[in-house]
Every structure is written in structure tokens, then in C-alpha cells.
Length: 112
Length: 110
Image (cartoon, rainbow over all chains, first blue to last red; front, top):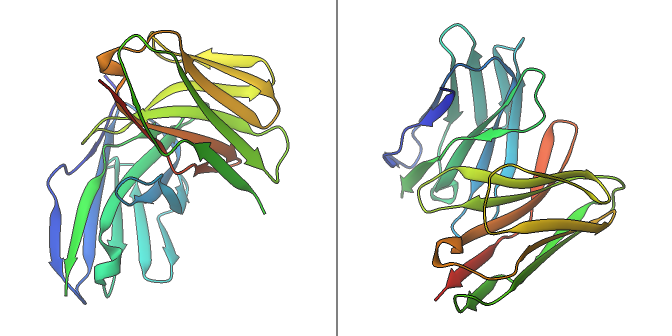
């Protein structure tokens, strides 16, 4: 069956360190993969998109990598801050598809 | 700029009562519109999507229905709520590669 998996355990890191979140998928050929941020009780907010032919994408302190061989995307936040604490969702759109598939998200806690 | 409005933010309804959640989008025309439900610790589950007025596709069989009476209006309804309908409901619209979400409605069926 098709699955998209994110680490269900919360990630706790110290302020200033780099946070790395993992997204693995099976039985998909994504046209692209997105990352969203969701705060408690709020709707997700789009952060970054990376296409199947791209290896890496950066935006300020954020970096996303996409390995279609490993079927994995890594999401990095460098110089993390307590304000980065949130749930981060991995989302993919299968090639030729219309509907995006959401992962359950990983909760990140950044301690001051 | 484009904005999406979803209301109400919270709702407590008794079992068997009707439901109507409304979502409107401003600043864009003919958007693709979506209703999602999010259970605690779970990913977003797509309930309905619409590519145009009166065009609704249902993803999962359930006690809910959706309608799109106007280009930028999307409504989620139920005639009789069940306890299992409780959850966090999100409306979204998309253009090209990005989706934009409303603030969500926390529905509690008691």
C-alpha cells in the first residue's frame, strides 16, 4: 500500500542547533514534495516545495533535500529558535495525480 | 492578495443535529477547493474537493456532504451528526503547487 511516514515521536533540540526531520514514502512517484508548518489549533502554512528533479532547496534557515532513490526527504532548520516549535508536515503529490497526500507530522520542540 | 475565511472556529453540537461549515476565498478566481479532517496525531484526511461550481468529488464515504454554490464558496454539511464526526476541519484552496489553509474549525459532537 502507499504510505508516507514521518517520525511520530517529538523531536526535542536546544536553541541554536540544527533540527532535522525525516519524511519517507513508499509506492509513490512524487511529482513534488512540500513541507508545511502547523501550530496547535491552526491550519498548516506552506514552507517549501521541492520537485522530483531537484536535490535540494533552501529558504532562509530552511533546507529541504529530496532523494528519489531512497524515497526520502529531509527538512532542516538551522540555528533553531523556540519560535520554530511546531508540527511540520510532509506532503507529496503523486506524478500524474491531483490530490496531495499528507503525512501525520513531526512535533518539534526547541528549548531556550 | 488572496485570503481564505473559515468559520466558526469552534463548534459544539449534539448528536443528531445538522452541521454547516462555511469557507470563502477572496482574491482569486476558480480556485480548487478542499475540505480536510484532521484527527489528533493523524495526517490530514481529504474529504471533498471541487474544481468548479457544483463540481464535488468525495474521497471517503461518510456522514458528510459538500457543496459549492458559488465560485469562491465551499460548504461542508451534515444532516445528522455522529460522535465520530468530531475533529478538526480545514478548508483549503490551491493554485499551482501550493495549498492555502483556513484557520480550521474544531467540532465537538456531544
